[in-house]
Amino acid sequence: MNFSDLWIVNELKRTLLVDDRYMMYVNGFINTLKITGGALIVGLIIGIIIAAIRTSYDKNKETLQLKGGIGYGILSIVNWICKVYLTVIRGTPVVVQLMIMYFVVFASSSNGVLVGIVAFGINSAAYVAEIFRAGIMSVDQGQFEAGRSIGFNYFQTMRYIIIPQMFKAVLPTLLNEFIALLKETSVAGYVGVIELTKTGNIIGGRIYEYFIPLGIVAIIYLVTVLILTALVGKVERRLRKSER
Image 1 (cartoon, rainbow, N blue to C red):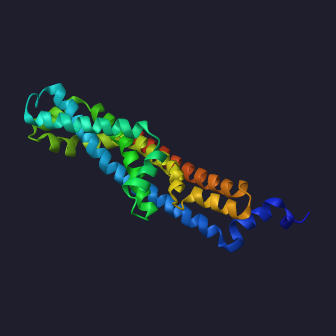
Image 2 (image 1 turned 120 degrees about the horizontal axis):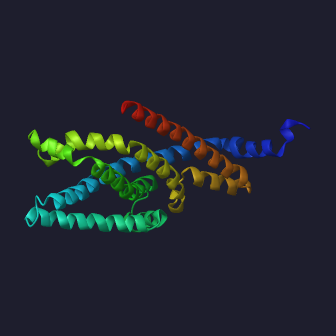
Image 3 (image 1 turned 30 degrees about the vertical axis):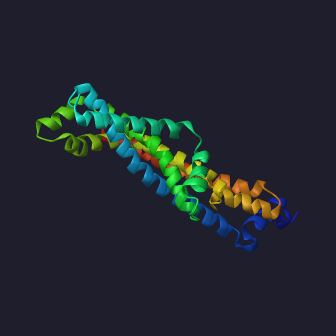
């Protein structure tokens, strides 16, 4: 049997080579990386802010430093807003949030990638915030007291002492959140974004066969996740060595 006559070879040719369809996968993967990278930055920024607010409230509630003052009242209100945000975002499907962003909030925008970055960034921030909050709360209270003893205020203590230790503790978990975010962006096609999964679906529709196109999508995701997982493992080993 001639190798070129095999079904799998012919399907791969139709999927990848005809009309340079492999470039559609390349462009789709680039859009996936754009959404993932942008959403990660948005999630980190919002997540750090929310984590700082919530831990500030918890720490001040424990030490009673602002208890009864105007500052404590404002902090309580902002903390409540953050808790509502976390509850709503973590309690609703990301695809619903994406569709609300695209069809309601940014209805006048045609930039699906930008909308995806905002939507996935806001969703990721809810999980990143809790990761950071857990990391900050895990730092020994004595570290806060040490910062105060050398003349740092609360924000200087957080910036120079607590946050560096927190990052070291949560970095592996944060990288795993990045991997999860990469896979979650596969639903961006619901709002017309031509990312990797949508690309496979489009090509499958053109050749009237979905196994090979979507199989290629699955392989690309799998290889990417395996590479990122290997990097996470390497980071974790380095962190363990540095603790010895």
